[in-house]
Image (cartoon, rainbow, N blue to C red; front, side):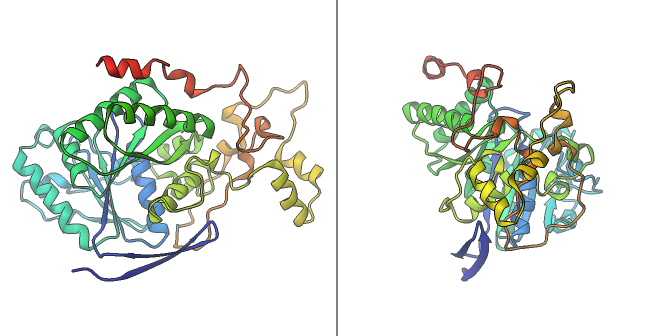
Length: 384
């Protein structure tokens, strides 16, 4: 049964009115290789959607090595294993987190769960489908690679987010993942996200390169959902066993997550650039100057505070000394709000002084992920 639901949200000054059915959008986060941040993105994306008032469930579908519970700092008495083998119902293991999301904890370290029989896997897929009328979004944190369970969750989903890292191995494995997905008959679009990049320009070039290869060799439509910038706050939050969105909601990482939320909610119809550099809401240093003047703050005084130049005898601060890395955790909950999360002005470094977001300077000492991807990537794929 379908019903009319109006969702009103205000992001970047826009009002969104969406008419959808009561069925949830099941979004599977997948990756060709492990270690690219699937669990981190899944958890924080779910929190971001819940902060906008959507009923959101986080489903840990990494059947062999589930670790959503570790990221949130809880250890459930029952998990998906008890559901699969008929000892508990899905409602018995569901955890209501104070961030506003529900969590279905997975199982870790059990060989039976890592190699489920087809009928058991079908049962899990059925449980996932039965939850569709309860939530607006179900975020599925899948395992990495192209195993049967990963492909099954993807084929059941309304959206797929393919997470990549700026590494040649990630490119190749992601290509193989899309190739398998296409061979199984998947015809929908795939959202693409580059994680842990240092510049938006790099993410744009990487996406263009990857998209060209996919268009040349595979009949799969990929779309950019955003890029996640390198942020030391993610590691700090992980060590505290809490998602970054709960501790550092104004950090570059959290701002990038909220940009992704906006695009998902509007289904791509938004004005925010898919690859917004460091989540900045300013277009240039000149814009920042005008904003400061509007607040009756002298530009020179503000510049010295935001961009302090180290004395010649002092050592220039490194990444571990950066203001963004020194942000203090905030335990304030993420209640639904109509305001876009502000970006932290301290993330603007000396490198950005005097440059606009579309003219990011790159010098020979700057780290550029684009150089990590071999220029003969297309030829390599073709030879396979």
